[in-house]
Length: 171
Image (tube, rainbow, N blue to C red; front, top):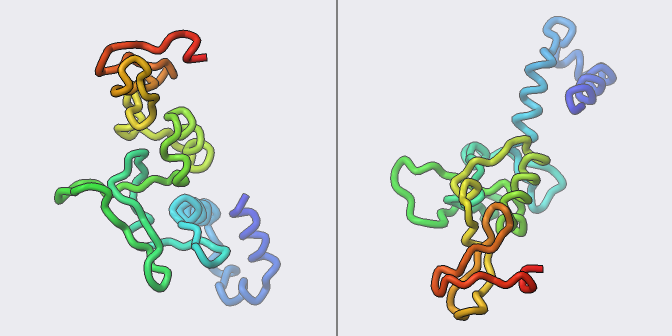
């Protein structure tokens, strides 16, 4: 889709076509599609302008739903990468491709958003968990522990008092 529009624009812009010498050296559409895909899936929306930017190193970070790093806009529009935890030499620098408000959501929702926007299924350590410990409800049995939902959206027993929520609590 993007490549078709680019090719049409080049055909319509005779000056650019001559400047790029496309009559002598035509553009390989498959290479152009690859470049457009790299741009689309690795660029960041800019906080001031209506465009996107590629950054040398941050654009190469892999995704994780429990990322090692987060990024922020620094002085002069620079993208600053910051660690969320202690990292050892050789640890992979990961960021979340999801919007901040999507990170705490259920695995199925995160997976759906990643599939829709970036066309991949996340296989990070958090997505492989049977129980998501970042989401839960205070145990009404002991008021100390937490009932956590598993991948089937069923609340697991409290790890403190081993109580389970009653049927009427879960509906």
